Each structure stands twice: as structure tokens, then as C-alpha cells.
Length: 400
Ligand SMILES: *[C@@H]1O[C@H](CO)[C@@H](O)[C@H](O)[C@H]1NC(C)=O
Ligand SMILES: *[C@@H]1O[C@H](CO)[C@@H](O)[C@H](O)[C@H]1NC(C)=O
Ligand SMILES: *[C@@H]1O[C@H](CO)[C@@H](O)[C@H](O)[C@H]1NC(C)=O
Ligand SMILES: *[C@@H]1O[C@H](CO)[C@@H](O)[C@H](O)[C@H]1NC(C)=O
Ligand SMILES: *[C@@H]1O[C@H](CO)[C@@H](O)[C@H](O)[C@H]1NC(C)=O
Ligand SMILES: *[C@@H]1O[C@H](CO)[C@@H](O)[C@H](O)[C@H]1NC(C)=O
Ligand SMILES: *[C@@H]1O[C@H](CO)[C@@H](O)[C@H](O)[C@H]1NC(C)=O
Ligand SMILES: *[C@@H]1O[C@H](CO)[C@@H](O)[C@H](O)[C@H]1NC(C)=O
Ligand SMILES: *[C@@H]1O[C@H](CO)[C@@H](O)[C@H](O)[C@H]1NC(C)=O
Ligand SMILES: *[C@@H]1O[C@H](CO)[C@@H](O)[C@H](O)[C@H]1NC(C)=O
Image (cartoon, rainbow, N blue to C red; front, side, top):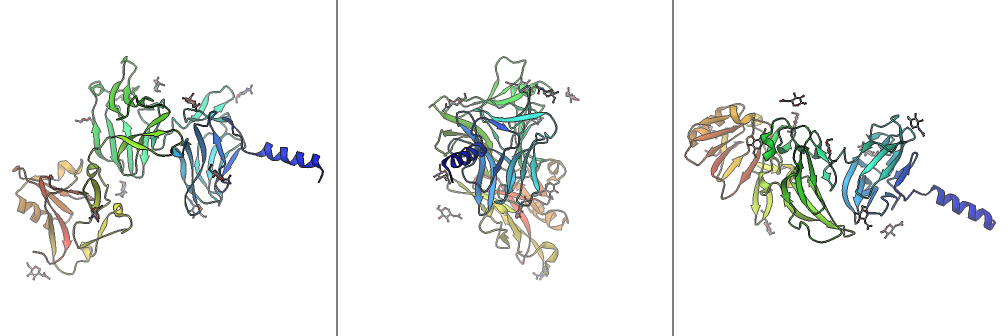
């Protein structure tokens, strides 16, 4: 081969390599199997690439310098997966089989290029440089400084979600319906907010803003607020259902928790899965089953919950109530109102035993005689010395 030809092929290779600038042209593709291929922001603070999540499993993510993931496209793909910025303007994630797993929904909407900003925002822009789609407007589980989290937006992680309501309240929910954290603000005194938004300042103050207020209302301070330089702070809904502020020093790839919405992790509904009981082993929340009549669904992941060794409907002998001292089962509306009774502790046990729909019951030990029935298909428990109630759970057994 002549030197000229070699130079030609080398320049061709350079030409077809992935653009490293902020502008991503239509027709660009990232492949899951190609290592170290990425689209970077102008000063490389953020980049988009595939991250390996296990054998033959990859996820397309925007990461902060060091590798902290702050946004992800769809779900895991195999090594044949790719992220494509199509000529029609759609950004699309495909699996090796060619199946579309995620799509920005921007085909034929005038997108002429994409851009990853130094703020971490991925934007699909038209020829007038107006964003047709933005990762800040379509968050996954994380909010970055300068990201405007308005009413109607949702952070999700597994069955958990976080949102800012019209009422001005901030809520954490399990499976859309169970609200296990509900924080009211002064702003909540104004009815029907529509223009409020939650923002995290780079120095670590989380506030809700509303156009009629000159200053935002502060929700939380990062414990390292205003300290250090070249530190990214972000708000993330973790897969354990807690909402936290973290900080990460540039390039470190490590994160440090600086604030958590729910200080008592066992108060997160469903943390230990169905029929799981949360308790503390020292300062760590652990997940146990109610009794020997249950087993972990997955011994390697106790958060997946428990199941009865013998189901109630298959019980050959007598059904009884297993007692759990200093324990409660979380009961939230609409269960709450229809399933609360003033009966003594022994009737709290017996009435549940004879009720077809009752799975478990909790009797408050404060003298009120209040008893809650758990009738839903999902039972989430908490046991610890400070819990002022006794609970019972239906089992197939011979215990009197
Ligand atoms: C990918 O990047 C890592 C870390 O920057 C480096 O150690 C590795 O050699 C690179 N691999 C390839 C194939 O370029
Ligand atoms: C992607 O393809 C792999 C292998 O064909 C398959 O195992 C996996 O379930 C697919 N993922 C999705 C989300 O369809
Ligand atoms: C920009 O896009 C619009 C609509 O897609 C089109 O009508 C217009 O000609 C484009 N302008 C330029 C300069 O390409
Ligand atoms: C990259 O750009 C952002 C936004 O302008 C800036 O805050 C950050 O300090 C820059 N980082 C570096 C390493 O230049
Ligand atoms: C955030 O979004 C709201 C609603 O779209 C808007 O009124 C407000 O000006 C935005 N705030 C910032 C700082 O961009
Ligand atoms: C979540 O809610 C849906 C719809 O109400 C229900 O079908 C599903 O079983 C619930 N998930 C769990 C884990 O209970
Ligand atoms: C807002 O949160 C407060 C608790 O901080 C609660 O008492 C109130 O009922 C909530 N309002 C709504 C509409 O959820
Ligand atoms: C709140 O405002 C929105 C939009 O202005 C309106 O559609 C909605 O009916 C209002 N809700 C209440 C409870 O006033
Ligand atoms: C509690 O923690 C200790 C020390 O980490 C560990 O050895 C023990 O197995 C834990 N117990 C349970 C029930 O998880
Ligand atoms: C079931 O309960 C009845 C009535 O209390 C009792 O006579 C019987 O021995 C019990 N059977 C078993 C298998 O425990």
C-alpha cells in the first residue's frame, strides 16, 4: 500500500470516528459493544456512553466525570444494542435484535442536531437552536443543578416515584398510590400552584420557586453546602425509595450522601418487599420474614420480600395469627379509613383471623384500642423496640 493510500484510510477512520464535540450530528450511533465510545460535553464534564451492568448487559447513560450516572435511556440492552440519532430526528435505543426499547418521540419534528451541555443536559435541537426535547424535561431518577423540576414531572426508580404537586406538597409514592412521604411547604397555603418548580442550587440548597415569590422556599440543605470546589451536587430517587442529595468530586466516581428525605429507612413503604419486615441491625436496615412459616423470595436479595411456606388457601390444618411484638404494618389511605376499628388487642387478632380479606392486623399499644387491618395484596412491616404496637399475621400453623 502506498503511503498516500494509508493516509487516506487513516483520515477516513478519523472522519468516521465518533464526534467528541458537543454537537452530535444526525446519523450518529453509539454501540454498546464498543468500549470507550462516547459523546462528550464541550469541557468533558458530562458524557453519554454505554455502561456495562453485568455479563452481556449495558445501559446507555449520561455520566458525570468519574462515571456517576445521572440519566439513563430506557432499559438494559445486550452487546448488540445501540443508541442512534436517526436522520428523522429521533433518538432511539435498540436491542441487539433491533427492537426499539426507548425513543425520544421526536421523529419528523425538525430536529437537526443534538448537543450535550456542560450542565449535563442533553438536547435535541431544531435549525433555530430551539430544544425540541431535553433530558432535563424528561428526567429519570436524578435532578442536577440548573434543572427545572416543574409540577407534573416525575422521578422514578423501580416502583417508587417523586413529584411536586399542585398543592405545593412534595411526595414520595410506592406504586403510584401509596404516599409514604408527604412534605408540606408554606407555599402549600396557596391553592392550586401551577408554575412552581423545584431546583437544586450548585452550592447544595434545594428550594421550591414560584414566580410570585422573590426567593424560593428552602426544602433542604446539603450537609456540605457551599463547601469545596469542583463538586457536583445532585438529587436522586434511589431504588430503596429514599430521596437523597449526594455530592461527587470531579473525576472521583464516588458519591457521598448529604441529605435524605426519609431519615428512618424502615419507614419507606415496601422497602423489604411483600410480607417483609424491616428492622435495624445496628444502624443498618435489614429485611427479615415475619416467622419460620415464611421464606425469602430470593435469599440473595432479602429486599424482594417473603412468601408463606404454605399458602393460607392451601392450609390443611388450622389458620392462626402469629404475634409480632413492637411491630407495625403500614396502612395508608384508602385502606386506612375503611380498615381502622376500635377493638381491644385480642379482638384485633381474632377479628382478623375470622375475616376472609384480612391478612394481618396492628393493634396500637397507646390505650386507644385502635386496630388496623391489612387487606391489600401487599404487606410492608416494621419491627423495633420503639414501635408502640403489636401486630399479628395470618399463618397456616398449629400455634394457639
Ligand atoms: C478505555 O478507557 C479506560 C479508562 O480510561 C482505559 O484504561 C482503557 O485502556 C480504554 N480501552 C480502550 C479499548 O481504549
Ligand atoms: C434484548 O435482547 C436480549 C438478547 O436477545 C434479551 O435477552 C433481552 O431480554 C432483550 N431486552 C429487552 C428489554 O427486550
Ligand atoms: C429550518 O426548519 C424549518 C422547518 O423544518 C424549515 O422550513 C426551514 O427552511 C429551515 N431553515 C433552514 C435555514 O434550514
Ligand atoms: C465546564 O463547564 C461548566 C459550565 O460552564 C463549568 O461550570 C465547569 O467549571 C467547567 N469545567 C471545567 C473543568 O472546565
Ligand atoms: C421553570 O419552569 C417554569 C414552568 O415552565 C417556568 O415558569 C420557570 O421560569 C422556569 N424556571 C427557570 C429558572 O428556568
Ligand atoms: C401496583 O399497582 C398495580 C395497579 O393497581 C397492581 O396491579 C400491582 O399488582 C401493584 N404492584 C404490586 C407489587 O403490588
Ligand atoms: C401536605 O403535607 C402535609 C404534611 O407536611 C399534610 O398534612 C397535608 O395533608 C399534605 N397536603 C396534601 C394535599 O397532600
Ligand atoms: C387548578 O388550575 C388548573 C389550571 O389552571 C385547572 O385546570 C384546575 O381545574 C385547577 N384545580 C383546582 C382544584 O382549582
Ligand atoms: C447484623 O450485623 C452483624 C455485623 O454486621 C452481622 O454479623 C449479622 O449477621 C447481622 N444480623 C442480621 C440478622 O442480619
Ligand atoms: C384446630 O382447631 C380445633 C379447635 O380449636 C382443634 O380442636 C384442633 O385440634 C385443631 N387442629 C390442629 C391440626 O391443630
